[in-house]
Image (cartoon, rainbow, N blue to C red; front, side):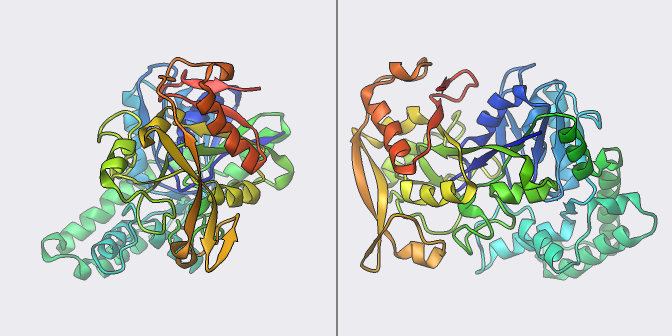
Length: 433
């Protein structure tokens, strides 16, 4: 009767998908409770091999026989979801109402939300978003003006009116060459409605189903989207996302009570990165070194956004921010990805273990983006290693320098590291018991 959680502890892109992918085989249900099409997880389908990028569909789809649930807290983009479903099917995997259910209470990203997001990103109020409308659907949700998936189950023209009026409102704000005629506005509305209504067989009261399944002894794995430092309540505001990314936020997004909470696994990446705006205290300003750590565009496991393909900003590993994330999520164990990338920093790697802020030494990070921008890091410097780790499967077989790197995180955070990624493939993980 437990819901186990896998959550990111940094700024997203920690490699959550590969650890969810690794764990999913042991669960009956894999669920998403936050985020939307702005999230990207990469999995390796057991049936077909290869790499599959997922954005709204839970990672359990990579395994046959798993029920995948998209919960109340997800911002749903129907056309993008349908395109994703076709990509999954093209990879030889099943997607149907037998293995995918979507909460009828999930809020819908409407076409004008996406247009408004793009307009903002082209202006002087740009926030470095993924331009998929998340901030604007969230704004409507909390103004109590949003539309939920349940609208396709109801009779009447409410959804049609909402979509068309939104498109009409934003149309004059678009560049002249993107503005639509009345006929095209009508056609865009009808196309969107057709796509959205095709999801009717997938719509369900997923909170009720989850609780019934838990009462029946089923095991549930929840994969978090984004990460702790992007949390709307606890992250580096305002450089955050528009949903809660924490363990408790995910429970709320699924409609499951805290009494069902099982193990919470926090994912961290040995290489620190960030996409978009906001402070990055340990940022590397030497672009040559940043490019070396990042790897080539298109390279497997390189530091470019799964959704956006934008190069990620690169920094040195940062334990200070992780203390907040471990505390705020009640993390039981850690998984570290990309240990094999650490030698890219050079012969040594610096790890931030405290900050200086206005004459004081801080062991945990301030949650204001403005305050973080004033912080400077204090580093512990460790030697790296030259040995290829890609075939290592036992902790004892790691070089002593790699063990020292792992053990610094364990001692500073007080949480064991139980999984260590040494490559992008599902098999390239060291499991510690």
